[in-house]
Structure formats: C-alpha cells, structure tokens
Length: 484
Figure (cartoon, rainbow, N blue to C red):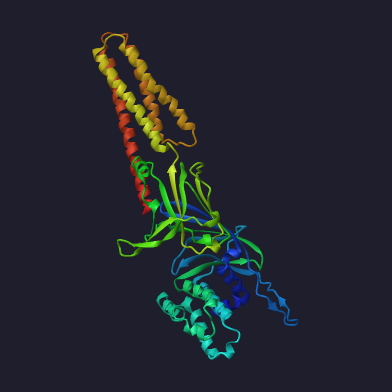
C-alpha cells in the first residue's frame, strides 16, 4: 500500500473526525466497558466502546458557496494507547454484529499521526501569516518537521520536540501563541514515545457505533508504583499461612478519562468473593527505590461529586469486582489504577479441611482412650465408650451431605472421602466396643481389630494433614506468582 494511496484515503475530513476523537474523546465516547480475566500470569481484557462519530468539517458548495457535509462512510476510531514497539497479543476487533474490523498497520499509524500533527499545526497558524516577517517556506519547514515526529526514532523525536516546545521562540515567531499551542504540544509529546491503535469502521458523521475488542498481555505490577494494599495485614498473613490466600491484583485504567462513563469489571476466581476494590492515584511524593529509580506512592483516590462507585461492598459482597467511574474527562489527574483483592468464600477449602481434620483427630483421641480402658476393662465401660465414639461419627455423616449441597463451599474430593471414611470407621468402632462389652476379658482378635481401626484413623489424619499442607503450599505459591 503506497503512501500516496494512504494520503488520498485519509482525506482532510476523515483526519478531522479522528483528531476530534483523540483530543475530545469524552464528548463523543459515551461508555467504555473493560472486562478483565486472568489465567496464570496472562491477562485478557475485553472492551466495548459506545460512541458517536464526530461531525465533519463543513465543505463549501462549489456553486452556491454554502456549507455542505461530506458523505464519507469511512471513519477511524482510536482504541488504546501504547508505547512504540509494543505488540498486543491476540488483538481482535469486531463491530456490534461480530464483523471483524481492520486495524491500521504500523506505517498507516505513522502516516495518520503525521497528518494529525499537520492538521493541528495548520489550525493554529494565524490566517494573516503573510503579513508577518517569516515567509511561507519557514512556516512550512517548521510544520513539516513537527509532523515528521512519528517517523523519527524516539531520541531524535525528543530532540525535535525540545527544540520547538522547550523553547517556543520559533513558534511565537510565526504567530503561534502559548494559548493555542497547548493541543499541538500534547499531541507532539505523545507521539515522541507512543502510538495509537486505530480501527476502521464503516460509519459516517454523527452515526452511533459500538466497537468490541480484546487482547492478551502479561500481568505485572509496575515497579515504579507502590500502594498500601500490596503489604498484607495480619489477618491476610494468617489466611495465607492457612492456605486461604488472597488474589491481589492491580491494573492500569487509562481509558477512564476517555469516556463519559467507564466500567471496570472482573469476575472472582472460583469460590472467591471480592473483598477490596479501590481506585488508586499517584500521590505527590516519590521515594527512591533500591535500584535508584523513583517509586511513586499510590493512594486511594476520592474525586469530587462521587465520580467513583463500587458495586461490591463489605456489607454486600459479590463474586465479581465492578468499579463505575464517570465524569473524569474534566479532572486532570492521571494515571489511575484499579486494585482488586479476592478471598475464598468462608469457610472455603481451608475451612472444610480443618473441620475434617478436627473430626478425625477427635475420633482418634477417643479411640485411644477407649483402647486403654479396654486393656484394664472394668465391665460396662466399653458400652459407654461406644456411645462417645458414635458422636463424631454422627457429626461426620451430618456434615458430608451439607458440604455436597452448599453452593458456597466446594470441598476437595479427597476431603469428602476422608470425612466419609472417618465417620464410617467411628461407627464401626462404636459397634465393636458394644460387642466387646459382652466378653470378659476382651478377646485378643477384637483388640487387634480395634488397633487396626486406630491405625486407619491415624492414617486418615496424616493423609488429610498432608493435603492441608499441600493446599497451603499451592495457594501461597500461586499468590506469589501472581504478585510477581
């Protein structure tokens, strides 16, 4: 695809509409929904953007001179910003009907960025430039140099940016004032290091459009930012030690400023609920990290007029995080982050295993005491002991169907087997103790059976204890992996 073809394709009115979306997005973008899913250290973000295409530049009628509007059915929509050289894995862009949309390639992005800078430059050059001291060649040369920033390597682009915007004498020389220089400065500074991912849509001016897109990326916490939620409190540390570790995640949400309303949503991992969700912003202070780089502290952000709302609260927790942000396009405060923390729904797997282990340990303790009674064996005690042993058995069989039917608790299969086995062994022990009461002294084979039962219970206790330790190790390892 040649440059001339692209220049003809991206005509003035098309670039104007695109520039309006980039500079004044919240005036046209009504709603952005950002849904996050995480699988290991891979993050999938699915977004939907509801917007209205900006109006065209009025084009004068050749005969009457009256304004008329372009009927172009092609429009460009900026989706997200990224650093130069970054690739978005598995990027998929579709319309509301599911039709795949074209995404601009690298060269097309550079050309479009150059045309945007050129258009913005022409906007602010005074109409009476011919009456000023510099000639048109000087003005054209400055505009051409600035519009070529997207084609330059970042170090060279930074030099050009500093040349014209660090010292603005040359721009003021051609009649550009500080007041109308702001938009051009922001645009040029952005294209020094960054680019825009852009989609082509079939829609004319003032048409409503819904675009959906998704991409994958690696999860990471930026080392230059720290917040108070990264360090677990005492309760969180105890939960981690017992295997009920939290999923603590932090995401950048730069698109919160690009729309009239922004929704961040993330489903909780299986059998978890949303315990904490906060919007964080950078505080004014910065510390020096171990590597010598500045580390900015993030604190909870509370903008005026309740522009941030949370769906899940401590009083009414949900199994997903939902942060609703609106009206931020008039607030100059970035970057923003979303911090979400999920916990297992109580009692969770740790509660299940703890109850099972307690029942097994209690049954083992009672049988040990009963066994010593049988060796000394005054008549009548085994029958009473049998009733005592039946108590944990009854509790075990009562808890087993409870775990199976409750939706909020999913016990591991091995734990259910252990619970059922401990109850069955305890009932068998009670029956044997009642039978033993009929003999005096107790026959050795019966004592051997009771010893075997005690061995089985001891084995179950060790087995469940090992499972508990493995759960602790797995959850803590998972937590550390996600954190890093």
